[in-house]
Length: 179
Image (cartoon, rainbow, N blue to C red; front, side):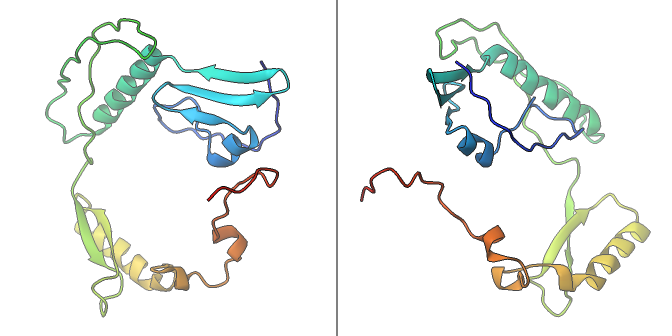
């Protein structure tokens, strides 16, 4: 089964455990139903229901590789050991080979809270603790000089069209309402 829709998409060159990320607008365009547990996407087509089936083993390999790459970038990580996972079955009942389970992802460094508005200690953000003193000072000053562009509450979002920031349910008007 096939379905073709014209979509706008963004290509980015960043490390990721995913080959593609489909957002809600795309899923809504396809009227898709997603099941992360079953690793499936179902969508209506003129000839019936189309289905995209994920591959659990490939998914696990991509995830492990993404974690490995993340660990290589983390210079403070003293241990590169990854505990093995237990053998199990995929949702389709297939046996999985013993694979490595990635260690939990940790921040590369601790972060420092800095006050953006010194008169208001609740208005803070965080910066890296491993920055040099001069860099910390410059970043803090830059953030404080530009404190007026931070939106701390929805009321601070003046001048933004409500159509952009208002949530709408994507409901087919031909369906009967149910309470």
